[in-house]
Image (cartoon, rainbow, N blue to C red):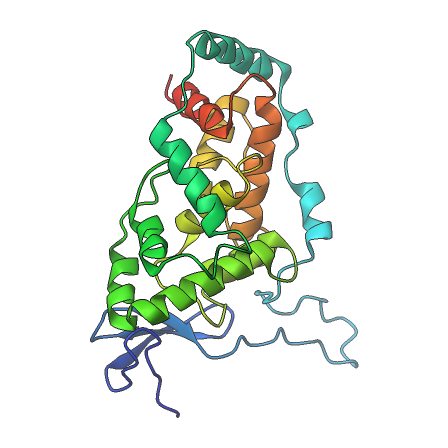
Length: 282
């Protein structure tokens, strides 16, 4: 068996296999830097033999490739599925919230404007290494959680390689081939060749919110959006899986659902997100 090399610290003598993942890949851990990562190729779903007419079409319990978005998206809850009483209740809360004048936080405005340029096609290659590192560590506008994993990877890889990976991940997320939802999932699962450890769901979502502030709420985890949808609008959203309800699809679609349900009246999506959090805990 070939030696397994840690993609973070590039050591091969301290890597141990932890388990086999549902898609056939292995999960390994580097005992030196404590980084856990998948390796190997997914095992294709076995196809039933031509002579076994009675074999079910899906003989395997795990489907590796996600189902096409066009097949899955009609099954996702829609704004029209919300009960009228829930809509009335949220509208009353909305009017109560909007009665208080809103002033955008100037620090957030400057931060968002700066990184809108940093992540643009023109700015990404020109941005300083300092700014790329700052985005991961600075919680302005949206808290992305503990940056320890990212900071450790940045040190082990070196700032040049770390910055190269952040640029590659960002370019792939915002301007890569295929559907945004599936690019997002691929990056979260570290299936992208230049994935950056620690640059996961929260930072990817904040990147979207900065790059497209009229579409994406600064609510950076699907679990938070799911909880808000269920508590305010009474809709149950799916658990994340590897086939239909991938993290990218659920993250993007729950965002779009919330924005549609919110309607007009908010100064920006920071204002809207503040309302959702307030109403959720009201």
